[in-house]
Length: 182
Image (cartoon, rainbow, N blue to C red; front, top):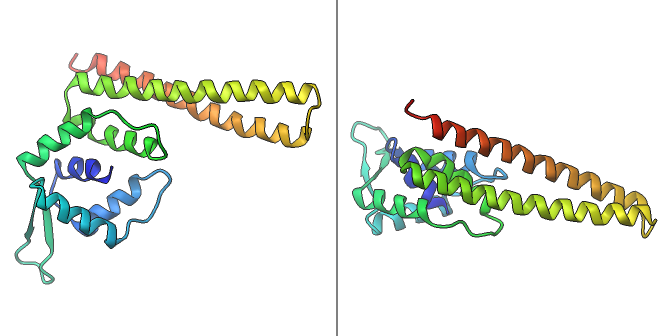
């Protein structure tokens, strides 16, 4: 998952491992710290695979190493952008990584990513709404702890609102893609 964002970032400019770690941290949902024990083995693996080239930046007092994406890395980036996103705990972060890399892929791939994301968001929304309806029935029949059930409905209100906001964002993005180049 992290390699997608790293390759996407390096398409724009070379960066040090330290800076890449900072960008990764700021991109995660929810925000998490990325240790050197994660970032540097990942960079080493990308270098071994030929996706990046790491060179020492001359003139730096501490011999800072900079990562640069290769042609093979560009091809790998394109493949990662076309891969479907797993429906797991990393789904939202993976989509956000893909959104950051959208400028680097063709319009058809961008639309496919948005379509897949829209379907995932709609699936979530449908589940939340179904659960809310069930809980509201339980409240009406006073089947269970009504106060607890009301709080569960309230929590689902937040989840449905987030899904609806995501749907609005997707709609706006699709419109931008349609009008791009006009």
